[in-house]
Length: 102
Image (cartoon, rainbow, N blue to C red; front, side, top):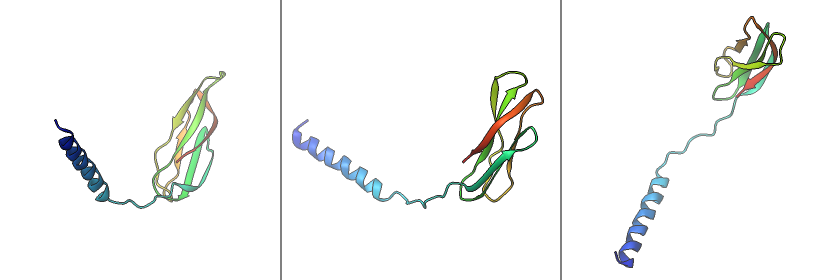
């Protein structure tokens, strides 16, 4: 293949990429969940976010009774301003911390 043909093909490929980039839709900026609180709740953890877009969920570190072995447990995904996300440790575990994951 001649160098002139290669240059024409390269130019066409670059043009196609540039044209595709120009027609991509723009997306609005999203605000991550904010105004969040979390705290122990029974034998688990509670979290609530009051503002923002997207979703968040609560997590808790649940220690097996009498050991230093733990499992991270996750609550349901929630939208800010709605219901709180709550997670419970099992009856053979005790809560040892937690938080909110945006």
